[in-house]
Length: 112
Length: 114
Image (cartoon, rainbow over all chains, first blue to last red; front, side):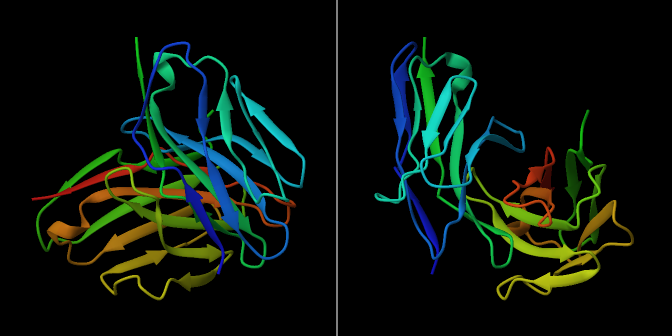
């Protein structure tokens, strides 16, 4: 069945460090891929998305490229800030029943 | 402008006392979802509506029910909350007619059972 695997957290970085959070997926067909972010006590916000192979999603300095050959959608940011501390979820959209399949989430902690 | 609104943000209920959480949307989306989320784990889908068609996940306890009286509103009813039902409850919407669209989430309702 369809699945999403994310690197385990927490990931702890210093401010201005480079960030990578790995995400790989297993799916039939060509799903859309998403990164959602959840700040403490809040709901989920879409951070970025990509709908086909080689698409690059980007927002707020974050980027992720849909790599069909490696079935990956890794999240990157060149210089993280304390305000980026949150939980990040990778997800795919199953077209057959319009449901999201979620990764386990990665908690990111940025220290000043 | 908020597009998916959940009320209340925080709800405290007594063990065994029925409680209702509400969700409204201004997006006119066909699909509305209810998720349960514990401790920053991945959200767990409880059920969803496609228009008025109700779809229950196989492992959703009977204690959880839902109503969707119209396109804009959806309710989650917990008939007899137990301590294990304390969680964040997330409502989301999507429009499958819009190819490859994302789901839009509300701010969530944090449920505490005492």
